[in-house]
Length: 323
Length: 224
Ligand SMILES: Nc1ncnc2c1ncn2[C@@H]1O[C@H](COP(=O)(O)OP(=O)(O)O)[C@@H](O)[C@H]1O
Image 1 (cartoon, rainbow over the protein chains, first blue to last red):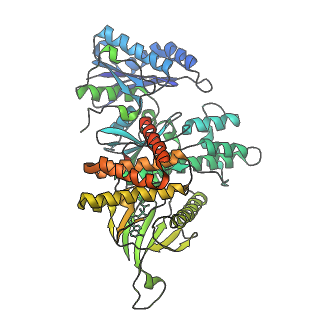
Image 2: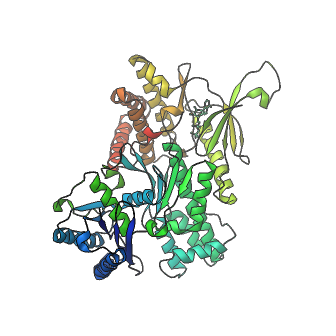
Image 3: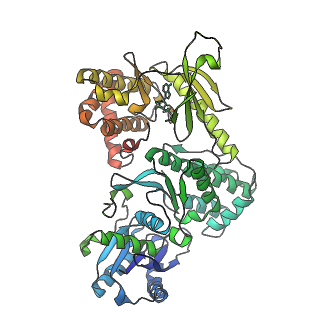
C-alpha cells in the first residue's frame, strides 16, 4: 500500500509518501517568521502546499493515481494551520476516491521512531518547540507520564535566543554557544514527580545577561533544562519497567541532549534510540506511516470525522494497531 | 549488606547497626542506608547540588513529619555523600497487608491512613508519593517512608494532588474494595482536618481528575 501524509500542525508543512517498508519521499517547507503567527503560518502552508506535494510525488516516482490512501495530522496544533492540511487531505481523498485517516501528531512521532529504529516498546522523550512530553504505551493507550507545565524547551530556547538577538529559529546557534560555555551559573531546577517547567530557569538565566558571558549562560540554561527532562525520562523508565528510550522531536538534533540520554541509558543498561533527524522533526512521512498502520488495523473514517482537534491529547487516542 | 530497594535516584541497603557504629555482639538493630547515586549524564555542579539538597530536604521532611506520624527514626545524614541512615522498620507493607486482612481490620488500617495524611497536611507537609508501598505496618501502627518527592506546603492544590495519588493507588492496587476503602480513608482524614476541609479536598480531587493529568500512574509502579 502507498500512503501519502500531510503534516501541518505548526510551522512545518510537510508531505511524505511511504509504503509498509520504506519512506519514499519526505518533503517540507518551514514557515520562518519570528514566533508563530497562526494566520501567517497558515498562509505560508497554503502557498507552498502544491509545490511540496509535487516535489514529494516527483522524488518518490509515484503518481497521484498510485496512492492508496491519504492521511493528515488532525491535531494537536494551531487551528488555522491544521485546517490547511485537513482541507487538502479531504480534497485529495474525494478526488482520488481513496480512504482518509486523521492521526494524532504526537503519536505519529513515536510510531515513525519505532519504524526507523529498533525500538519496540520505548519510553519516548518528545522534545520540540511547543511540546515536551514523556510518553509510554501502557494499558492500551499512549500515556503521558511527564510533561512541561508551562513552555516547551524549543520555545524556551527561542525566547532566550531572541533576547540575545540570535537568528530565528535559534536552536543551532544556541548549540554553538553551549559548546563554548565552561562555567556553570547556578539556576533553579524544577521537577515535580515526572513533570517539569522552564519559565523559572529561563527568567533566572535572562538575569545573567550582560553580567556573564553569553556562552556560559547558554551552557548553564541548556544543561539545566536537559538534565530535567533526562531525569524525568529516567523516572519514567524506572516506573514503567520499560527498557528502551526513544528521543524525538526537533530538539533531538541537540548533540548534548543525545549524549545525556545515551549516558543515562548506559548507566541503567537500557537501550537508547534516536531516528534520523528528518524523521525527528515535524514531517509528512510520519503522518503517512502512522495513517497506514491505523488503516491496516481496520480503522476507517468518514469525512465528518475529520474535523481538526486542536487540543487532542495523546492519551485520548484509541490505539487499535498495537496489542 | 542487603540491597532492599533500587529506585531511579537512590539505592537502599540494609545493614546491622552495630557494624556501623558499635562493634559489640549483643546489640542488634538493623538500619537502612538510602544513598542518592551519582548521575553521569549531568555535570557535577548540578549533580551534587541536586543530590545534596534532596538528601537534606528528605531528612527535614521526615524529621518534621515524625512530630505527627510514625516515620523511621533518622540516625544520620551526610549531605556530602548524599545519604541518610534510618531505622529499619520490620513489618508488612500495607500493599500486601490490605489484601489479606478482613474487612473490620481493613477499615481500621484505612482510617489510620487517612488520619496520618490529615496530620501531615494540617502541619504543612506534602508527602508526594502516597502509595501503599510506602507504608509499613508494624504492631498496629503504620510507618510512612520515602519523602523523596515531598515538600513543605499548605497549598490546597498540592494537598489535592497528594490525596489524588493515594486514591489512584488504592484504585489500581486494591480495586476490590476501593470504594469503601477510600471512603474510610476520607473519614480518617476528616477526623483530623474537619468536614469543611474534607469537602474542599474532595472537590479539588474532582477537578484534578477532570483535567486528565496524573492518570492512574500508580498502577505502573514497578516496586518489588
Ligand atoms: N526504613 C525502612 N525500613 C524498611 N524498609 C524500608 C525502609 N526504607 C525503605 N524501605 C524499603 O525500600 C523500598 C524503597 O525505598 P524508598 O524510600 O521508597 O526508595 P525510592 O525513593 O527509591 O522508591 C521501600 O518500598 C521499602 O520496601
